[in-house]
Length: 213
Image 1: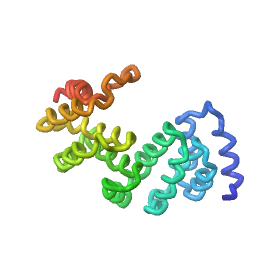
Image 2: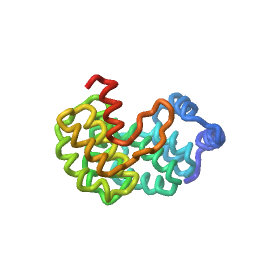
Image 3: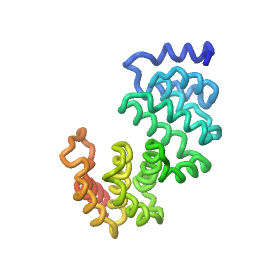
Image 4: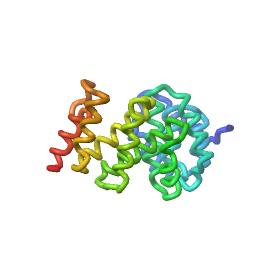
């Protein structure tokens, strides 16, 4: 895609390794929404440019076909960048409109692992933000059957969802803890200072105590 002068100018501002998310948010705040510009920046294949592109996309134009194209491009990045981009896309665009939320809710059995990650991460985020949707029993049934066979990027999101179900829904707490003990996922994994361990028995104990639940 041939870049406009505006896109080229922005790219010169964000190609340095010292670029921070705050810098991208500042630029995006000035631009607001510009889907054409976002697609130009996206076509550069550069990590920072694609993060900025996500912030200024028009969510109304994010059809399944467009999302599939974005995901195909995201898969070309290294593991860390790939997960940052897919989670950034979910949080900043896909969860902001009823139509894109309906897409997310159809991805539980998607053949694309990044779509499954979005589905499970979205379910976990609902609970993390204090909501208690009525499908926790159904989700746990699926997680218990699949989590040990899933792709690592999906396992993490399933684990995240299980953790928050265990925190907020006491009737499922022992079941969630038992699942963590069975899988052993993230047991002993080091986390940054101030962060909660991802191993479910520890995560649920710490986060539920914080909230007096």
